[in-house]
Length: 411
Ligand SMILES: *Cc1c(COP(=O)(O)O)cnc(C)c1O
Image (cartoon, rainbow, N blue to C red; front, side, top):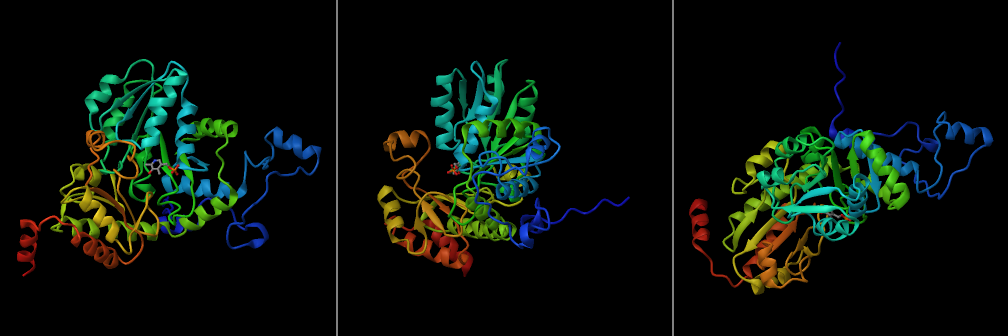
């Protein structure tokens, strides 16, 4: 019997996980702005509590708009279920807490999102959870830390700002050695369009949907995805902890997802072009982009990813003053944290995310003063490159040999 061909990603981004017809035959998803829901009569209550009839009970537990967003994200990620939160950090913290108890041990990689690291290294120990932070890519070190109490391994891929790529197969192998060990991947920088960690054997995937999934720099949202059993555990804790996204945010996420396939194609292309442009620029010392052959994890990126995203990190050939001059000369690109939206954003990790450290401490973390992270938006790539080029020309660093090599190729 011929298997039904699954619908394409673009189609599913618009239609998956939603019943037809919608309320009042609305074409778009209704926004259910209600804090609670009513029962028709006592029989309805009994049908609901006995599981005979599905019913929305109360806003912290259910919301039909949120359910559509969750179903759509689960479909895109290839997950049985998804739980939506009011931001990425709610998703991370609730998901981890749902699996932990005092006496457990966890392993996390050292270039995880700053707040995720502080959750694991500062908060969890207060509740008797032991933590080992291992350096990214040290798989032998990771394996050696696994012990009887180890409950979970948390990693990210790609990471911020160097876009390191995790060998998911290696983590899967390490996790297999211990029964009851759960693997978590924060896949925000990849999105389900570019990477599908569940297919590589990871147990739980997390996204800050604030970034590419929402895609318009106008909402905060987070999602946890995985098996129904694991998500039941996460959803149950969410009902206790809160962290519920409001219905309008859910609608904006659904709206953003309608163009997800298209946006990612375009952003992958733009990221690649801009990375190549910067790599050949005489005032750029080094570019970090997993799609480039020069990236140290290019082979892993090709193995696990279908596209490499719109974030490009690079070092200006100069010092902090040159980096500041570059930022100050930008006209189209705006200075700000976050990524994955329609507006191009540039951030200086040293001055913004790690402002509380001195240059020496930053350097120890590998955050150089000349380091800039770019998140390409949906503007014309030529305009983004032109703006970067004019801003880089203001850098006082001397033009190097590389520049003449480029003009030689050009002639
Ligand atoms: C932004 C981000 C988060 C936090 O998400 P919020 O939506 O800002 O709470 C977590 N992990 C990664 C990789 C992120 O980029």
